[in-house]
Amino acid sequence: MKFGGTSVADLDRIENAARRVAREAEAGNEVAVVVSAMAGVTNQLVSYVDQTSRIYDAREYDAVVSSGEQVTAGLMALRLQEMGISARSWQGWQIPIRTNEVHGKARIEEIPADNLDDRLSQGEVAIVAGFQGISPRNRIATLGRGGSDTTAVALAAALNADRCDIYTDVDGVYTTDPRIVPRARKIEKISHEEMLEMASLGAKVLQTRCVELAMNHGVRLQVLSSFEDLPGTLVVDEDEIVEQQVVSGIAYSRDEAKITLIRVADKPGIAAAIFGPLSDAAVNVDMIVQSVSPDGERTDMTFTVTKTDLDRAVETLKAHADEIEYDQLLADANVVKVSVIGVGMRSHTGVAQTMFQTLSDKGINIQVISTSEIKISTLISEDYTELAIRALHTAYGLDAE
Ligand code: ADP
Ligand code: ASP
Ligand code: MG
Image (tube, rainbow, N blue to C red; front, side, top):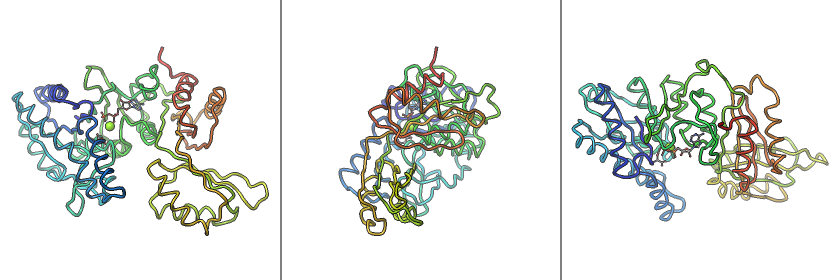
């Protein structure tokens, strides 16, 4: 059982979550619980770091931002003990949850779960601090924002759990963010592949890596509400889904920025000259378009990076201006990536056309397009985020009755 930030936002909510845990334990289940920090705490910790050090040491960032989960794990264990349930808290290093060295965005490599397994079979409930593990050099490493989901699935895999239930503030995965589209519909079952795309294209209900782990380790994953007793959404293999929609969901990401290089030389090696230095500077490039050059000599190159990488990307491109040879560099952080996702796209035509027509009918200009087998993404002005998502949601027949 994993409880996210809003589900442990204060002492009453911790008690509410503890009651759910107690119910499972009293029903005779062995239960491991993963908790997030109280809502808002991690943001506050990140901001402390930002205010202290502009280009920070990621090991110290991790030392600071991992601390929120330690508090909720201890409080949850205490609350359960008060209810007469045997419970113990565990921090990442105590299990240990072994990660790689990439502080701030570490991947879990191994969880030797024997110790935890023994305690569970003795009837003790384990309360594990999410989001954190321990690096090969014995330092706390965090798993990237939203990483408690990944702790939960990795632990479920290590413990061979029957189920991994992700309790959150919505009662499942919806066709799009229900905060943006009130008419979004709850999805009963979603395929791993679609969930993976939804998560990586911005739906923050699950961290991408946790879906990947669930798929690779066959963990039965469910998203459900910690406030209501309602069936949630199951994340399953594609062949378990009977009625497949062409488009299953719409995701968006505001964490995008666009860079355009005006009049770069249109010659072999130019893409390498641009993207090589960016990759060396650890800037992740996502969508790319190169326009045709009217004269065969010069062309414009547009691509996107995450908002957080924008300054670094611009600095890098300026430092390499001589090799790349461009007339002008334009940077725009006022963009959003809107994507439609569905495995049905493999066998249906016209899905992209519906998207382009719908946006055009609303007078929304598409700046960049990228596609893969089961998704189409467009980059538009951030000002039209809600309008675009709502219009697409209706156009693909996803609105709830
Ligand atoms: P937690 O703190 O429990 O981890 P998150 O805030 O990380 O919760 O994720 C839950 C939020 O994800 C919801 O409140 C909702 O606004 C957002 N969300 C975005 N896309 C979707 C979607 N397709 N379905 C459900 N929730 C979504
Ligand atoms: N507390 C961490 C975060 O806010 C991890 C999580 O909640 O999943 O990113
Ligand atoms: Mg989350």
